[in-house]
Length: 271
Image (cartoon, rainbow, N blue to C red; front, side, top):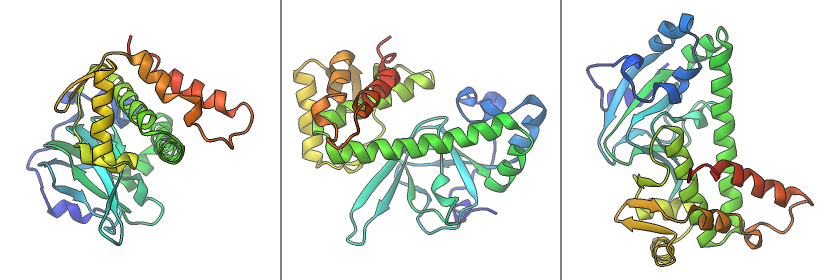
């Protein structure tokens, strides 16, 4: 089964995984050699999209999972009054489209943040292959678990933390993800706009700009348009783990655990 986005921006060539720079960071890394040809066969398209173009829209039938090959993609939902809520940003090697598994249709819109290429995989074929490859099955569950964890963390962040703590955690999270795919963890380009960040973090765009300016004046970051350099990772980490920003109802011991988890995730960013 395929999605209706197949008729949108079809490309005429599909490059194999052997020539992909993010092969070691995507689902392909979890496929045994004996099953690799079958894995490649589950990919039915490589889509190239220009900035602002949709890969799929909310309500379209589910049938594929998507992996960013280059560039970046955002997912977003639109409220009844027309307001957009960004639900995720996806970098090279990262998978999205998992929100359609349960209901049989995608619950969000997927939009290119810049010119990007995205691999489309048949969900049915991936599941069939996962029954033969324990490594691929584990990769799929890890991706689903990571998506759930990210959503839970964002709910906590938006509900109980200051604008500065939200922004610090956002920048550190991006840095950690860039590092995981072999990019610099301290110097990177923000593919998303200030408005996108505001919609994702539950802030106004004015607040986003004000916090970034404050971080720069405090020597925590340097920035030029969308180019970001993390100058004082330790200060950002301390701010992201500020106890005063954590929710009060957490059970005894949970506060320390939450801080430790973020510390472990971001500790290597500046190394």
